[in-house]
Length: 239
Image (cartoon, rainbow, N blue to C red; front, side, top):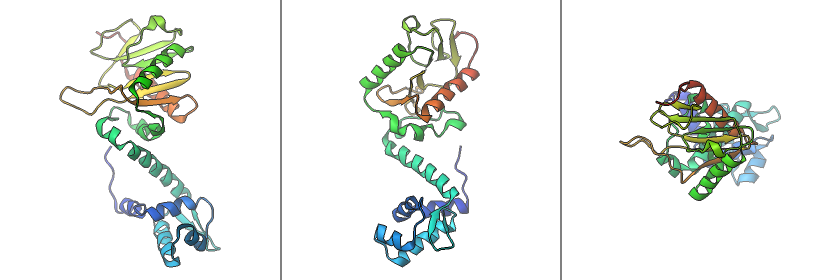
């Protein structure tokens, strides 16, 4: 979805484009005076006031009647999105070569939520996939990954494949245009995004991916992703 441009949005980005202002914004989760900000960041009074006014002008901070400053509720929301952008930037090289374009719109936040769970070692990733199959007790849900259902201990196995794939059983469903690999059981989930688009289509890079435990919010999003794809997939076996 394209970024909607506006004058106010531009002002917001400009207010966040200074390292000092970002540091001050994080400091303002507690009520803080101008003098305390000067001491904390080595700023002159007029410098601190200038930064605070820039943040106040776009609604990120509030000045209290006693002269102290505190982050606004809107500011807290904005900081959350900035943190997500920062996490994505930490994996800049990865996202230059992999695509999250297949994600439904309501799950576009996944790349940011997953960043702390990045696994760059292909051997570790394949071992994790094996563990997810082996440890599945209640269920195992699989998207575009070869699984020997006969060796899986749980009977609740859902498998989604690209429509060109050969079905292993009548439980296989087909899904168009999704090359992402996803494995989910009751303990953890693993996802690998495809390489960027080429003339031959997508290629999934299994040398790196994201491994999430069930205690993390990102697990719920991956769970939701599979349900979304399952519900929109074909109810008949792959031809």
